Each structure stands twice: as structure tokens, then as C-alpha cells.
Amino acid sequence: MTPTRTRFVLLVILIAALAVAAGLAPLRRIPDATADLGAWGPPTAIAFGTLLLAALVPRTAISLACGALFGAIGGGFVALGAAVIASVATFVIGRWLGRDAVAARSGGRIANLDAWLNRTGLLSVIVVRLLPVAPFGLVGYAYGTTSVRVRNYLLGSLIGATPSAFTYAAIGAAVVRPGAVGLVTFAPAAVGLVITLAAAVYWYRTGRRAVPRGDDRERTEPQQRSHTS
Image 1 (cartoon, rainbow, N blue to C red):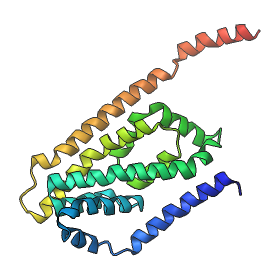
Image 2: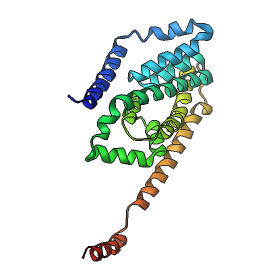
Image 3: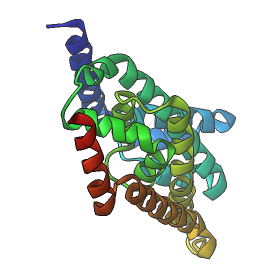
Image 4: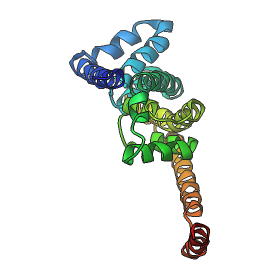
């Protein structure tokens, strides 16, 4: 087995091991342990949240727990902090262990997908982060294996993770404080929806511009034939 394939296999084993460890860990005890730490509670919760996200635990559950522990605003910042750090960690691991394996496939669907993600850049990251298409940590590992620029990935992850972090934190806070849910609770979700729709429309329009029309193809084909003849 080549070193490139060995690293990719290690990436798969690492992700699977983290997922199994999260499934066996006593997750219900973490909120109680964090609440008893006083001022150290938020940074400890961020650390736990980062590990859980890397272990493919759903971010919704983590954000709800942060809101229940630290309130709508404080819990939102804790959930967002865990999401940002987990984004960096999973991306670095994915790039270190899996990038060479993807880059080695110069043709086929994987190469086309990699080129498309790199071309769409920031927009693709924002849309993927806003839509629950896969576990948060798994998306980070996957993006690490692509050629997407680090700047676009980090900024897109921050923009895409912010609305849901505060929305679910507000809902989690309202669970332990009945009557706290209001229109403001769902404002971040509305902002996220607007960003998603705007990105999707822009994405669609730029994609259509990139595809040559039938008339254009008819004009270019005779020119190509004349050059070759």
C-alpha cells in the first residue's frame, strides 16, 4: 500500500474510532460536569463541543445543550466557538491525511467535484454549512481533502455556522426557561435562510453564464474545424 493510501485509510479509521468513542461515552454527564465549573464552564464546553463535533455528533444537539446551560446569547457564542474550532481541526486532519489521495485521482467524478468546489469557493462552503446535508465534522474532513482555499473554507464555515448556532441555543435556553421563545429566537434562522437563498440564486446565475449557449457552440465549432483543417 502506498503512503498516500495509507494516510487515507488512517483518516477513515480515525473518523470511525471517534464516532464509536462518542457513542460509548457518557454524554449525558457532560452538561452537569460543565455547569459545576463556574467561569471555566464555557471554555470547557467549547472543548467538549469541539471533540464531539469531530466525532460526528450532530451539532444541533450540542447547540441546544449550550443554550440550556449558558442561555441564548452565551450558549450561542459557546456553540459557535466549538463549531469554528472543530471546523479548523477537521479540515487540517482531512488535508493532512486525505488530500494526496484525492489529488492523485486526476480524472473522474471525484476530480470534477473537487474542481467544482474549488471554483465555487466561498459560496459552496456557506451553502453546505447552512444546509444539514451531513454531520458538521464530516463536512470538515471532506473539505480538507479538496483543493478549496483555506480562507474560503474558514470564512464560509463561520458564516454558515452562525445562524444555526444562535437559533438552536435560543431554543435550548427556552426549554429550561418556558415562555422565552419569541420572534427574536428565530431571527438567526431567518438570516440563514436569506443567505442560503441569495447564495443559491447567485450560484445558479453564474452557473448558467459559464455554460455556452447552443448558438455559441454552433459558432465555435466551425471555427475549430477551420483551424484543424
